[in-house]
Image 1 (cartoon, helix red, strand yellow):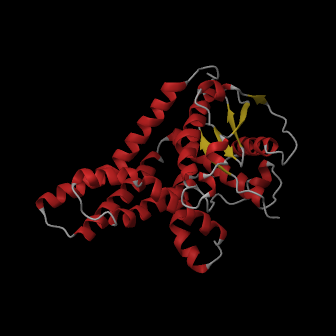
Image 2 (cartoon, helix red, strand yellow):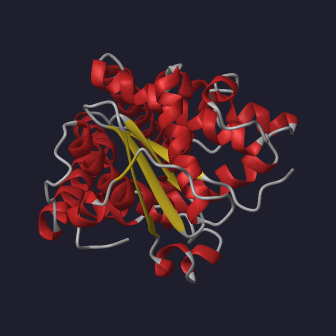
Image 3 (spheres, one colour):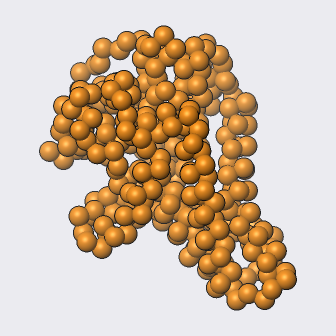
Length: 312
């Protein structure tokens, strides 16, 4: 049976966030072993407004998911996992953290490769096309190196386990598998709409988009690397959406194979306790979307709203 909407999610610390059409839900296991859940409506201006209906512009919601919704739920999960559910992370501090994270990411993955190629061309004459290829290759290697390096951290490995649990829960829902840990465990750990695949697509598409900028002075190049990120995200989103629908096509299978393979680095086989959390988040979301009856929560957390006055 086809589903009315493609649900998605994100692994957080000791938990999973699930996003639907109009709501989000997050489930986190606290230090006492209980599952703390929270759900709230999504900002309709972001998720149901004009932008979300226009091809190439609607990719903005994926950026919003990662930078705002994702960051808030990540901070919420950290507080719950450490037993600090009442800690307030409000307004300017939350937005400051998001802004700082964005600046660091742009500096590392978009500006530093440009700085390296500029340094090379200061000493060696390199054709502009080759410059763009080197810059894109360095950016891609930085991304892959970052994912590879953090995969050795124990805490991150647990997050990757919850990432696998999120994928399995979504796959189970889309395949009409009963949402119980033992049956969900049999589903695939990879998913064609994974955010990891999206980021890889962004890295590849950026090579072609930045090549269109040509060879202006260094400051204009830096500015272009920043302001074109939403454009690249929009193109990447449309490709991800198209490829997910046509994943059985032979050519599409070849194109999405690297993204699926990369998920082997960002997912781990989850245990049943992790699957229990991901299923709880999904069931809570489906209940909020009025697609199923209300779940029986172990505990309901209200800390996420208290953590940020910004709203979604």
